[in-house]
Image (cartoon, rainbow, N blue to C red; front, side):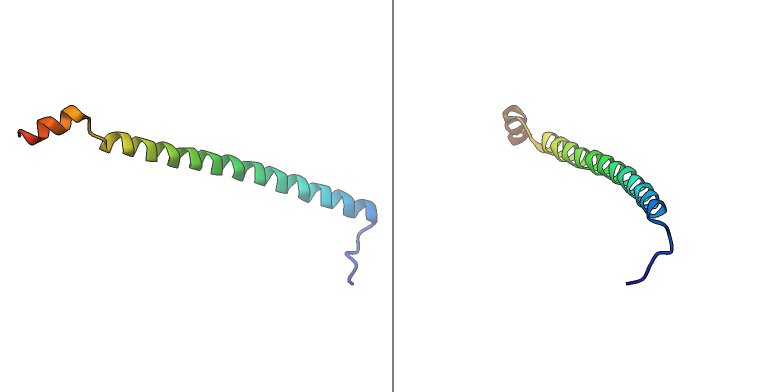
Length: 64
């Protein structure tokens, strides 16, 4: 096993710093993924609403 060359306290400080940066990055990614999921869900819902015809629109389409 290879030693990092740091004292225990310095190693722990470095680990805490890395964990903090990772946590911030994960929070940002979670936010991005949540927004993307909502956007996809909204796009899917609006496509269904746009494509769906009412009964009256179908009846009018038969006589045109």
